[in-house]
Image (cartoon, rainbow, N blue to C red):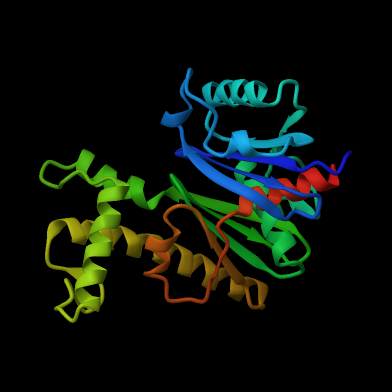
Length: 274
């Protein structure tokens, strides 16, 4: 393959992240776009027109066939005929062994994220927590064996579902919940009284929902991390990623490492070793 870079695309349930990376995996350009901005007739994601021509595209797509077709159209409009590979989980790849009963049933985003995490933290036991539309956890041994995972509703989904499924609770979306957090942080930083007493106990309904869901997420992660450490009798690195990572990690009381581009990092490793 030529020295041209790879186009990497992580199509998630809420938005699409992309990057251009060289053969060493170094990302030289990056961006993100909402699904709504990629509707038929809309231009390519901002920044694509200024990119150097990639040698190939490597895609993880968990957003469905409509997004897959739109991505193909956008790529062909910008770089006609560009070779592309839509990755799938498999039994073994790039130093990671898949412990799923049916390996190909594992989401491509979770698979790429594990490959990216192992490349970033080789030979370490890892718990990988990704906070997106869903919250996913992957347990990865130091030798690269994925022993299994957990899937729970994501932070924003938990918040929204409370309002949608109860008669008297408000419906909050992620931007509204984040704004509540930010407003609370500003009051505390300015020397005013905290909206919480005893840590996370809120004095209004909206913040009660936001704080309760953050603690529910944090408790899941902390329990899984502690259980893995006990089972493996070794320190486990907790690696966190995803759009809601800031909101959840604010409630975490265990050591963790932030990595905001695990899927793209994994795609770069897969492309380089293809």
